[in-house]
Length: 495
Image 1: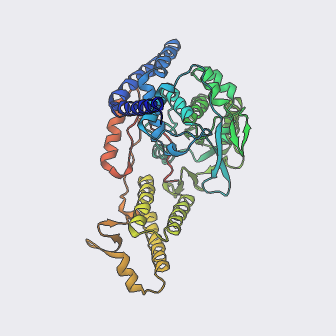
Image 2: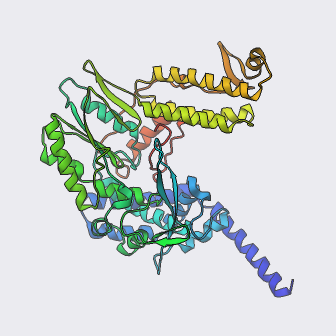
Image 3: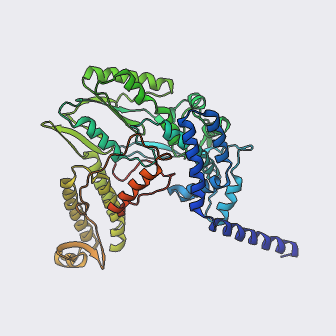
């Protein structure tokens, strides 16, 4: 190694160390507080319809060093942090992340094509496309999402619950119960599903109606995708997998609730939406059919259309599924239970874990199953699920017995029982090892879910939401509730 190369090597090593020190010394509480103050000012400006001020504040936020740091942190903490885009780049080390902060700029920004993969679609034999941006593009989307989110939350339909801060599928179910449970409630339900929502939103509509830097938005939308080593253009839609895509989808669909309220005042017409799935209640089948056409016209302007197969009109006594639950009136009483599809999926998921666990230790199997069992039970704990929980416990016990028998085909029943099942307190036949035991679905107690205030804004009613989430954390410590103001998405454990 020559002297010059040696000097360069030591300099680069020292630089990486300095960058890592800078990243590790960031006070994230102060960073979030700075970003939240700007977001709150944006939300207030939107409320006052001061659009020029909104744009100025958005500029300040997207050029803020704190916001850039937070954007990098967001994408390096998400589940896909180890899945690279087309450039193969990942930000693993602290110095990688600190370097990335300085690269977030709108000057001559050009988005990379996305890497297209296909993943199984839940409950079907089909696959849905997933587009993976590069790390730098994810961070740019996260940065501009920070500036767009207070606008989306302030302008959102009040009864939109998906991809929203501090709102959940449980909030949607509780509101649906409120609309349908009374004796004089509307009896007809339009179950809506938008065909390929993310893939078909009109780019022109987004650029003309979403308050975001138009040049940057165009880069996000027109990046194209690579599949099988070929580059394909994107003339429609916002990619599933993009950080900012859920916000753009919500902004596209917002306004539908107010349209129906204007068209059908005092007609028992209530609108409930979770992402691109929605319900509309109606007093008659004819009105439900009329509402379907109103919605169809609303969507056409945005480049979207209803799925003919999945958009149906149902009477409440026949029941319908929504977000993994079945809603149905029995002799005038509305009951919400886990849907058959949801039960079938959790059984299949557990069966798949047991199939993969042929060579696992009992500890490893218990850890994997507990995550699934607790997550699914927490998702359904606010409805009529006690009987389902007990039935699933029995099914899981039988599946575990078969798993143990396959591991020890030459051993007798008594040996197997003594090897894997033990007494725990007053309970016998507990699948455990040492102090680690398998949790049962029925360990989760049924508990009512309190309805979120529909008019509450996370950026203007911060104390309300933090108090609500802290109360939920105390009641359900295992639910891993996140208090981040950038936490949103579709829950998957219950579906």
